[in-house]
Length: 335
Ligand code: AHM
Ligand code: MG
Image (cartoon, protein in one colour):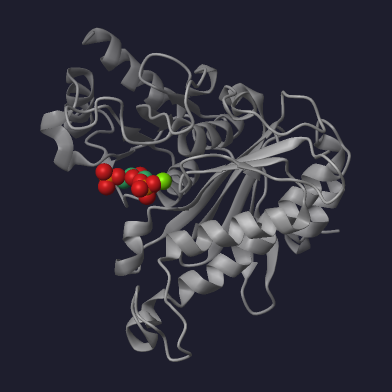
């Protein structure tokens, strides 16, 4: 079939052989993510109507309580995965503890755990800007048939079996990797089907966009301050363009397509950085590396960090490889 007619469902079936342990389990996880993404997409698109049908904490015209969208997205993804009994555990940025998923038969024979940020950048909802879901899949370490353990979730990013994001923007796009390149699918909302729209995504090795919350400049480490000044200096192809939505999925998506670097450094306000290693940095790092880019904490590869806690934070520099190299040069020079 022609590539541009391929649906996500067809693409998953065609590429199942790429999955490391091809038992169909991973395909079923993707089908659940696809379903939950459609439900959340529909709700996100209606968010502007909240004032008409009732605000958060109020009752809508049907007398139902309105929920915050990030809480709603969290429940949709968790319930979709639990109902289908296809993962053995789930960790979410929204939940303090991981969830153990029990199968209907005795014990739990599923092999994968899923980690996610169900609605990242949700402060953008109120202003009609883009938000995203970010997810990451690992094969469990503990024995199949026993309850999951914390160690199943605390694996370095290099152990990821799959990762992806859903960007709820001007259109809804699902981008994912299983370690064999990156592909993006756009939702046709009229018929509820994702079509392959961005086959074999590649990030340019260089770019002219830098994405950072410059309002925090005074709190940044020396190396990042110097790098930002470098971006702004008139020389060669500089000054670069500054583009920052403040929502990871659209900021990374734009930079993959156009070439650029995303920066969330440590600061005096957040000494460990703001972004979460497991729910935000590792999945984005896997996708960007698979697209030919890089992701670093300023000195070393994000995906090689061995996590010690579920909600661990880390500094994050991610995008075109030459640009990330440059950030590392500046960090090293200021060390
Ligand atoms: P969240 O998980 O609370 O939504 O925060 C994550 C978001 C990212 O999407 C975004 O890149 C960053 O936080 C923006 O932070 P800031 O507003 O500090 O620039
Ligand atoms: Mg987040």
